[in-house]
Amino acid sequence: MPNKIPSPLRNAVAALILLSSTFPAWCDDLSEARSRATNGEHAEAIRLYDRHLQTGRPSASVYFEIGECAIKSANPTAAALNFRRALILDPRFEAARKALAEANLALGIPPDPVGWKATIASKLPLDALLITGVVLFWLGLFFAVLCFRVRARLLASVFLILSGGTLIVLAWLCDPRVEFRRQSYVVSPTGCGVFNAPVDNSEKLTKLAPGSVVTVISERGRWIYGQLPGGARGWFLNEGLESVIPRT
Image (cartoon, rainbow, N blue to C red; front, top):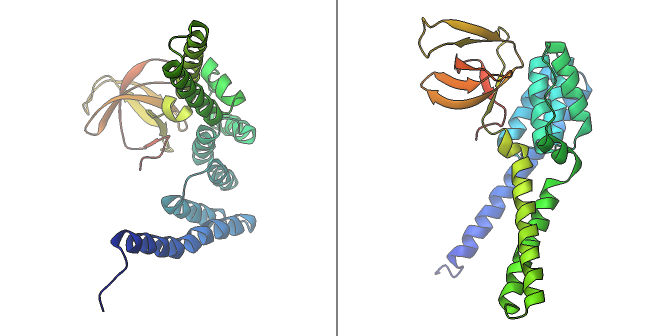
């Protein structure tokens, strides 16, 4: 009997079957991780959280919970990294901000400088800001096309376009996922040496403590050239570093 089901429909059904088969496992990892964390099995909970993040969508709450498990496992370095990741996904997550400050204090890391971008991100919902900007921008274009012969309406259209464009740019500039995309975090318990040149026998300039954050400028094999927390620059090996925003 010939197959009368259209190919696109067969593909959609196959995708739904695959999703239905993976969704329970995805949920089970998260619920099991939370159960283990409640029972004090923090190392196993972190393993399950990590497995959940490999298949599920990352969320600020999951990173925050990993950070809490790391704190209870006496690992403030891993805790600070995950609290930082929670804040990147949700800059208004005050519990994560407080927990990050406490973890950095335990590591002897100075608090992050608070600039205007961080202030705006912590006060305003960036997604709503971006959506509002897009709506205003397209409304302005729409009215500009319809009312280009009416001066007053044309001025209103220009105002909408400029307002929408400003909100879009502001949301983009203040988004931590954009601002911190080049940052790496020192996870090595022995810290990270900073050198004058990308060679093994180069002069050692300083050493970064665990929990320090550097901004990557360029890469050359195993070596990274970047900006240190104080603004100085130097070379360091990529071993013992982890991207603040996980690489997919």
